[in-house]
Image (cartoon, rainbow, N blue to C red; front, side, top):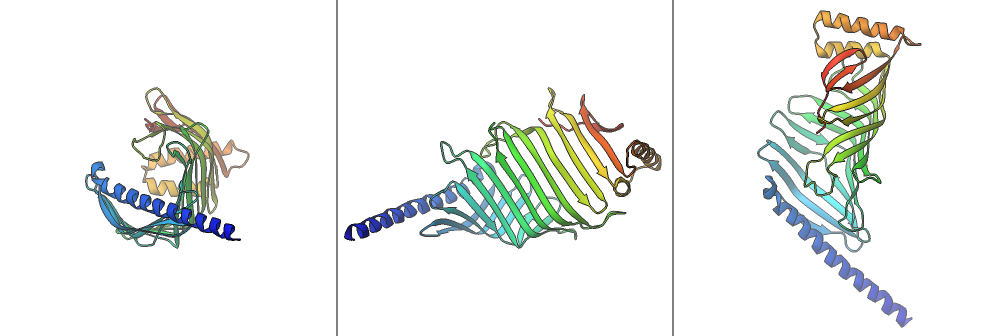
Length: 320
């Protein structure tokens, strides 16, 4: 029995020592990140504390603020917390409160939500390469200083490294999105938005973000938008050509296309002659479908130009 007690005490002391060493390292690391902000052209600060003994490392940043003077951007939050379990410090969990303030040169925003969480996982080997990053906000609202607000019941996004280190699985999903204004013919609530794609970065996306990697290829596995009577689906592949412009094709399917066209027509404020030409083209394409309420169109990018079905849209976007 004495031997067992000695073992238990020894393990407890070793674990307590590990927590002390780890907590000090976490605190020094957080302070070093804040101290290094000016070298990146940023200003910021916070009061940093660490807790969580014996099983977690809990970092709390109080009155955290970051500013990019050159771009006129700023972010301020009452607090931010980062958690890590003692036995897997390579997996970080972040938490933020309501009342975050975001400043831009054009307008300011306030971000609120019942739950704002993020997760960062790194490979527990070598240089702790980025493995997966994700975040979600429930009952969220983004309010603008110009008087409009965008809300949602649930929103989540994630990025996960694949076998090829340049490729990452990107997924985004949002439910019950409340728009500031209802477009003509549509409601002010989007029932659901979802997309899954493989993104190829160049150079590789690392956890330090020491470079600004470009997305040079997108393999869109699935995209879905449900907005009242309008249902939009997409699938296809786009990659940078020799000139760095997007080249590829995305197949689009629009169910209930007439309300979508009315909303687009009103928002785009197109000249009457252009409106009538596009409307006639869409009607003609719909008559070629088994269901006149469904449009099947290809978004094609080639030779530096982009078109939707037979309709030219202008230059293709630049990827690199």
